[in-house]
Image 1 (cartoon, rainbow, N blue to C red):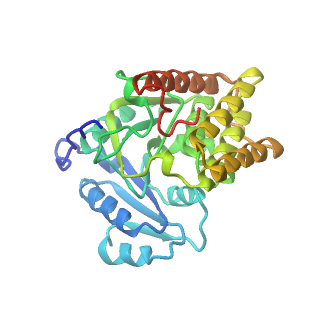
Image 2 (tube, one colour):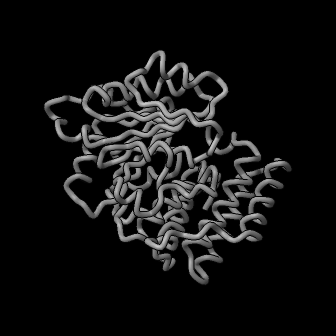
Image 3 (tube, rainbow, N blue to C red):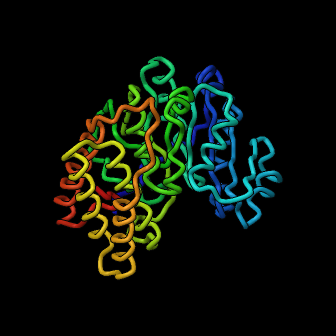
Length: 324
């Protein structure tokens, strides 16, 4: 296990970051993780004090999440939804945003201050950048959630996103936010492909981190395998063309079964998800998105390369979390 890198604990400097954080709306989606959300909001308080707008969308939590936010974090704008809408809750929260750039954040994820400020500065200086994926790192182990530690340089036209994404609000609106039919999982990667297909750039810099205190995929439940596999198949059918679509579907399907291991329930869930993704037509893309297969092809090449390099270094073990 690698040592966790030193986390940036320095609060944003108001003079240095003037005009940066006040261009930012942070949208946090919460669901039955009151303690994790409290830690996240504690970490976001300095960003709010530096000018950022913070919006919490509570996805009909049953653990008094909304009451906790009202009592302890009255400075955050709270939206309490009447039912669990899945990733559509992010869309509802983003509808309330008033700033130029959105930070879309899971309730157990906290951005690194310095990296966030730098990424915001780059986005504000370059209007072609529609989104930025922050590097997902576990705060205690220092391990990457996906095998992106193999990428050591800044990359443009990056075909992926995760639990911490910066997205230009105009770009978010242009591509229609997250795909609500997905409900959960793969919506972030689908967002990156939509942005690229709509003519926006997506940037990744390994020094820009989001600290994600989440279990690895090996601990995920059968439901994860069903929905993530179904949505992966849908995503490939939405963004692929010809052989690229077939390759993406087969690679993702096979990798899901590999990650399922010896668990019969997970194996069945992965199979069920693939069948559902093939049997039902995928949700239609917005008219603003041109799906020519290039972005999906780039995603498949990237994931295949990273997976092989991680497997070789780990003695052939599958890369944690990567489904394709």
